[in-house]
Length: 55
Image 1 (cartoon, rainbow, N blue to C red):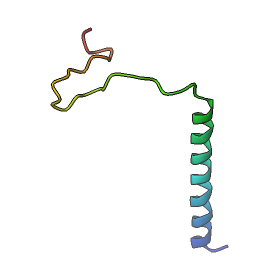
Image 2: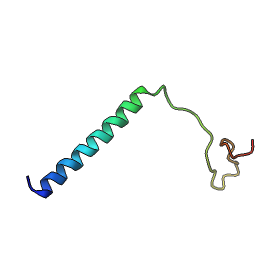
Image 3: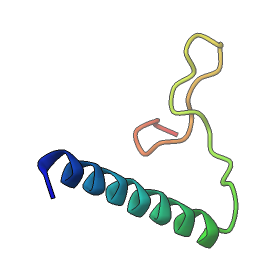
Image 4: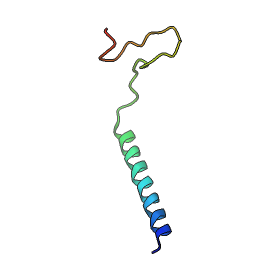
């Protein structure tokens, strides 16, 4: 097996494993958690949900 073919096989294997773990994580989660935005980028709304927000 030459280097280019080995690289392609490793590349494909990496992404299959990464996507497989993502699918497993998504399937085992209970749903979407609603959380406040970490930063509000000028919307007038202050961020209010971190350990450092002071609230």
